Length: 284
Image 1 (cartoon, rainbow, N blue to C red):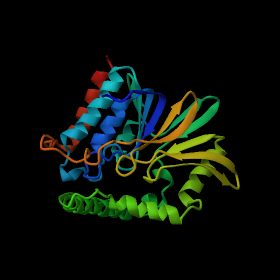
Image 2 (tube, rainbow, N blue to C red):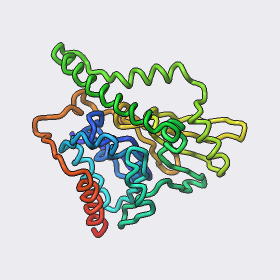
Image 3 (cartoon, rainbow, N blue to C red):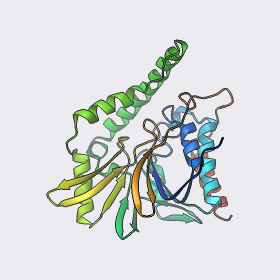
Image 4 (cartoon, rainbow, N blue to C red):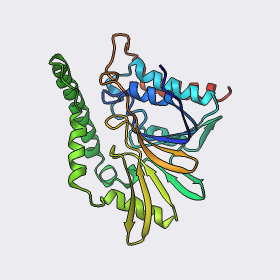
């Protein structure tokens, strides 16, 4: 029995990291098919160009892109906000193709509230001051993902439940550090200075919805999380925003099947083909 389609006004999702082992494309695809929204905001790090040289792009990842195109064809306004892992698209800022557009940030007025949406990497000091360290961390993250997959293969043999090592680590860090982080404080102060009521970002892979108080004032802060660890999204219905965690309903559905053959395109060819497909969809 098919689950009921959820009606939304806006859905904000980020950090797919398509083209990497870490991406959970199958539950992501199920989520996209489970919603009917007027506006879909892809809030950065959708395609991971930092690790794309691994020549890894399964069919399940392509299905995610195709589902987004189908949503465009059906009249959904899709806004692609660039992140640090897909910063190659930043040169296309303010590009519009029918219902699809690429921007670096987005400001909306929803139910008389000013909403500011962006990826968040501009407030990450490591990326700006030590980009080599950020890329080394991404490489280590990729190694941990591969190691995690090998562990889960062994766990499955013993009929155990799969685990995500990096999620466990981040959850522990989050529990130990409930104080306001420098990242959150910087974003809050910037939002308050712009008279923003709600700021939504991604980047950290840690979903959170809270009111942030600084010396400059108060602002609501939502991090929409990711589709590597938490399967979360910021959603708006009738002007009311909430943080939603998608329950996939299957522990192993993110694992690849024998039919998920690899598609290994040239790096530039992939970006060009995606843009061309979006352009075609804009005419429907």
